[in-house]
Image (cartoon, rainbow, N blue to C red):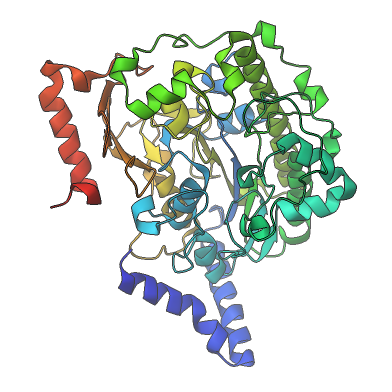
Length: 512
């Protein structure tokens, strides 16, 4: 988005704040009436939006996607009522930059939220601003990782700190699950709150015997109803009851699991057992001479959880991950049931996704921060009544940067000029027609280890500023184990992909 486009959009959103009270109320009423009139002109067109998110959901980990371990009956049912995208990608495989792209419609190099310690810049307005200006009640319940106290266009917001108020003294149990400060897990929610005086839990909690800063995992001591996922589901249902039938709404319902700490409630932990899990086919199979140095380092030593080098610990982590996913699915089911019970199904677009994936032992790697499909790929399911066919799978690659313009397109609300993403509403209407599109992602901007990715057709090319490039043929090598960039016969293909990548965005370190 250009500076002029941003300024014009901001001025439009800020006009009410400088308008006399009576006139401001009239403008708000007029905007709402205009939106309502538009909805009345198109009686079959959905107007509400329920955006459901989880954190670190591996794109393949869905029962309907063929994963025989995953227990995701509610997400499977949602997919059967809409369209499932089998090749959806985040723009940056780490929480904060990815979420910023989803909500602003901009790539990382444009929104400049480079990592999990960078606040979202105020000038980058979100889909909540766009829909709020159109008369929508905007709510954000759960994890969003704004880094600071900005609300980014949401009228109604509940997050980790509100959950801690609910927990009261039981917050100590949560602190003992995390042990080390980890804002990605919500304690602290905002790093600055602890920056001046340090971690207030030091000397108060009992440390476990973990070797790194993230535990392998165990059953949570918290009762199921006290988990963050239960809190988010309950409060999302409260929002739907109190506000869902009064005006059009945009509700983001955002869960933490299956992100660490990998400590599910007992009911779900009992469903999965480490000794019954199977290590990925790529475990201990990577030729380290064919992958970038930072990938080699992560395979040799997982700093977050060194115990996962042992196969039995790896299997236990896999079991706890699937238990955490099952718990999230259960809570998603409660929210979707409430939407149905309130009679809102026919007027509500439902979109489910995650901010990034999880390697879960593939290649001997864990968590995210990589361009391999298990990390950069995300689940994406959309149900838009009157728009999407039922039980459809779409092979067209799509990106989270497209979510903002797609949702405003479906709602009939103008998106601001200058977004990097474009609507994929046509793919929703005709999912069987595969489109040839380019997908881009970035990592660790700016810096000496900055990386950039392009997927075009069946090929994925990854460029690193100071490291080895990667080129994979996803058709013949879906596990991304054979780096074609190192083979002389693929030199021209690698150069072609790099040229296409640089045509999109040329890294500053490479500019003359």
